Image 1 (cartoon, helix red, strand yellow):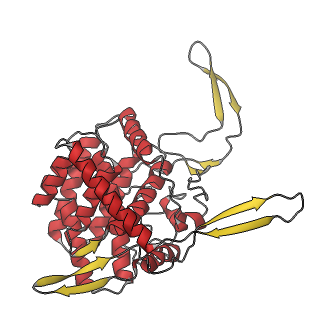
Image 2 (image 1 turned 120 degrees about the horizontal axis):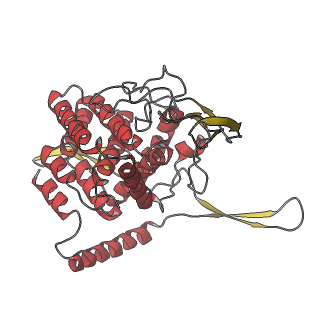
Image 3 (image 1 turned 90 degrees about the horizontal axis):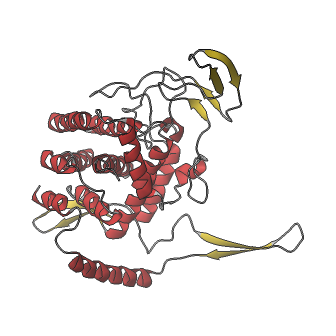
Amino acid sequence: MSQRTLPLLIINLGGEMIYILDQRLRAQDENDDKTQRVMNDIVGTMFNKAFLEELLRPQDLYSHRALRTVLTRIAHASIMRLNLASMDKLYDLMTMAFKYQIVLCPRPEDLLLITFNHTDTIKELVKDNPSLVNQINEAQRQLIEVYTPLSDGEFQLIRHTLLVLFQDMQIRVSIFLKENIQNPNGHFVLQTSGPVPHGFEVPGLIRWFNAKGREVRRTRFPSGGSYTSAVRQASFDLSGDRVTLLGTNMYSTPSPEDMDPPTTSTRKPKQADTTPNPLATEELNLLAKLMGGMEVQKLLNVEAGFRVNLLAFDQEEEEEEGIVISEGTGHQSSRVINLKVTQDQLASTELARIAGEFDEEGSQTEGPGNKGDDLLAMMDEL
């Protein structure tokens, strides 16, 4: 397990969270100034100097529970609030988006390019705040200083650590399902076409060399895919062409296919495009139905804040899950029974109460040496 994985994990998951919240706030026609303030508060907390210094310290990877706690506190740095069920839903979307990017990145070192795509896009969202832009630039400098000297083997270990963390997460996302890049069982579909990474050759050729190291003959074989030559080298500097679009905002680009490596040398990352993607908007509209809208509640002597509920149990979900049981009879037609799965509000509330008690008991037995305590304590002081 690599001890350099946590910074990339937090920044990329935080970037996906910012994409979702930004699109959701704008889709709800909230006040632009208030929406921008929420984004500024979240970005300012995520790229805080003391927070990044603690984050970049070599350390073991956190558990999913600790990661949710850190990301929840980042989101709650603004006037917006998420309840536990809402944060769990948001966390599922963040992790599946980042897992998709990890699976599709052609080289382990492209994880750094994915991270830079997130920071570049976030920088565009807060471009009117020079202080935040400087914070993000400083974070990128630190990432360049820490990660560019790493070898291919060290990047592969980071990628392997992330894949082990996400291997049991197979949550279906409607955007991915409709684009046929995710199977109904939650597994992603790997591409067998497109440009090969920079520095690699198109597969399908075997070279034979003699004892003197001279090539004597060549043999070709079917590679099983339609690959093309590499386009160009990506920039690992503070700014530049990242080549890959993995890690850019899929909720504002024309299609999730743009997250894949480009097939022409003229395609560039679309960071400033604010036109909503219809498929991505449909996914977020489902979230809106589950959220029941965002309410601004005014309390006595307390500033108004967003109350976000991603799982409103008093509303029927638009996409119903079902269990299909087929009974083969030897005929062309078979009997299919659809069992509708619903959520009971009282049962869910009781389960949440029991889970809360379990978490409290577990936290008492773990002692003061829990992983992430230093980071969470520092966030309390911000």
